[in-house]
Image 1 (cartoon, rainbow, N blue to C red):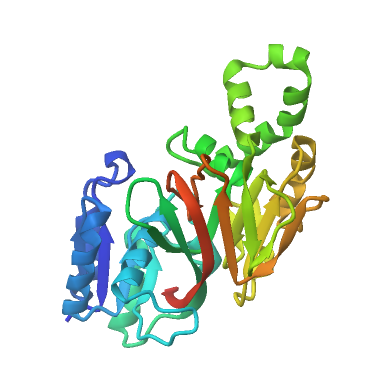
Image 2: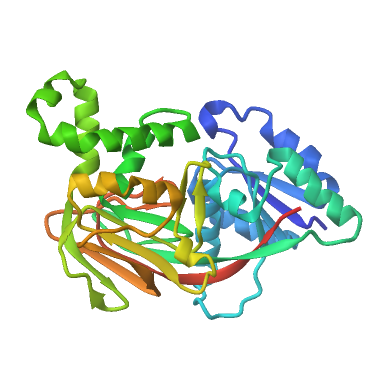
Amino acid sequence: MPEIGIVTNPQAAGGRNAGRTDALRAAAGRFGVVVETRSVDDLPDVLDRFEAEGCRYYVADGGDGTLGWLLSAWDARRGRPSADASVDTPIFMPTRSGSIDFVARKLGIRTAGPDLVARLRAHLEAGRPPPTQRLRTLRLTADVAEDAPLVRLGFAAALCGIAQRFFDVLYERKPVRPAHIAEILALGALGPPVLSARRLRRVVPADWREKIEHLYAPTHGTVTLDGEPVPFSRLTSVQVGSIDIDLGGVVRAFRLAEDQTRLHAQVAGLSPWAIAGNLPNVVLGTRLWGRKVVDRTCTVLELVPTPPETVDPVVDGEVFRAARHVRAALGPTLRFAVP
C-alpha cells in the first residue's frame, strides 16, 4: 500500500514539466502514487484516491501556490476544521519547485523535486518516519463578484494597496525570480519623486510611471482587527500572515507571527513618501512606522472596500480578483514532512 500521494500538473511551468511524472514515480517507487491533474477542479478526485490508497503523506509538486490549492481542497473536504480542532490529518510536503517557495524556506527544506521525494521514500524504506514540523495556517474567505464565496487555506495574504499590487507587477515577467522582487522595491523607492515632480515624470519611461502609479494607488474601505476598527479608511497597504516568511531571501514579513499563536496584521494609510521610507522595514521585517499605521497581532482581520471598489487578494502568491468582503482568521495547525 503506497504511503506517499503526489499531485503534479505536467502542464505547469509553461510545459517545462515534461517527463516530471515519470521522475516522481521513479523517486517514490513502491511507496508512492503519482496523480496528474489538468486543473484545480481535479483535486477532490485526487484526494479521494489518496484516501482510498491509504496515503499518509500528501505531496504538492510545486511551490507555495500549488501547496495552497492542495491544502484548500483538503480543508473543504474535511469540513474546514477550526483553528482549535484536533483532526486526523495527513502530513503535507511541498517539493520546493516554485518561484519563491517561502513555505519550504520556513520548513528548512533545501532539496527539491524528485530528489526530495526520494529522501522521503528513503525514510520510509528504513522504517523511520521523517522529521516533521507544524505550521499554523490562516483561512481567508471572501465574497467575490461572480462565483461562490472564496475559501482559501494558506499562510500569507496581501489584501490591497502596495502589498497586493506588488504581485501584479511581479507577475508581468515570467518566470518569477527573487531578483525581480528587488527590482520592484527599487521602483517603489523611485515612486514618491516621480509622483510629486512633474519634470521628473517627463524623463521617466512611460511604463515605469504606469507601474509606479499602480503600486501607489490607494484602496478605500474599512478594516477591523478582532472587531476593532482601524481609524482611517484610505488604505495604502493591508497584509496578514500566520507565520513569519522570507520572500526569496529579499523580504522578511510577519515576524510577530513567529510563534504561530496569532496572525500578524499590518494596515497602512500612508503617503507615498512614508511608504518609501518604510521600505527598509519591509526588507528587514521590522515594524512599520507612521501616524496611520496599525502593526500588531490579531485572530481575525476583516476588510470591506467601499463600493464600487473591490480588492484582489493574493494568498501565498495566488491572485483572486474582485472581492467585496475579505476575512482572514486563524486556521488549523498542520504537519509537514522535512526529510
